[in-house]
Length: 384
Image (tube, rainbow, N blue to C red; front, side, top):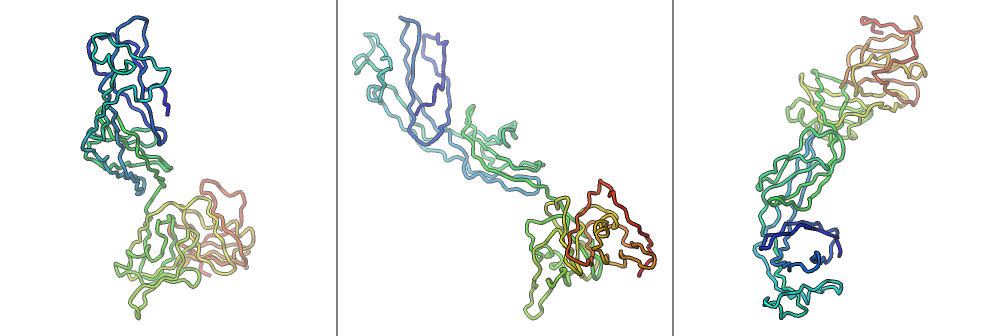
């Protein structure tokens, strides 16, 4: 295979033996590669001899993995396997498949190699099986060098912290003095991970999630409360439940995986907190509501209940909304207006909502005001 020119020195002026400059190449594909030397000069100049050619493989790290935890990516790799020997072969250039257009090297009458066929020079080629020692490693995220100073040769891990959201190709190269191997590569996708802390009071609570954990099994999410002997029961808006079966002495779960659109009724034995780590719920969430009672989530910041229910009121779908306490929003037929004692939707809380038909509740953007308006009265003491 032909790769083109790897090295060119057009200013050779030394009359004594000198070490040549090292050059590297990366094979583009599996195959057989041929290396040749072409000398050029003005006419009738001195001879130029090339000898002791070393072909050495700069082995790459292997088994590179990229593990994502939050906004951090931890890379692990295996050091290149170092060979134990070199093989040296002396092959007359006349049997090295010299192409017909190559110019024979003319030797002087005093040179002992004059008697060789075609007056070609024997090349001493050293095939080095990776005996050169790794001096360190460099780590890249894409084309960005993360290690300005190469890692020590016994360091086989690196953690990239505070990585912005996105998909990245990480590269690790082995350093051999002034040379580098081809890279080992691995991809990693980073998505923002935050921790939600939900405050629970003794007895019943209605909660919702503003993050979606990697494991959405409700049993796994509530395991910390189970281990602390604080959980009594979890109910969804239907017939699903998570509770302890005394006969089998185990917790039984019939609730579907956690949904960002649903709320859950949770009973605990004492005041406590539930912490959930996951990715934030997307904006502009649309919650499907079925005719009758639903338990909905509030995965966003604090907003006025009236603002959230405005679209359902205007479409005449809302019948009644309740929080976990005595707050409610319903229509007062006597005064012909909606009365709100929920006041604000609180992040992490859930709300019971009754509608008169299947519909969707789309959470408004908190940064934008709603152009429609409805008549309502807020009265914290009102409890119909």
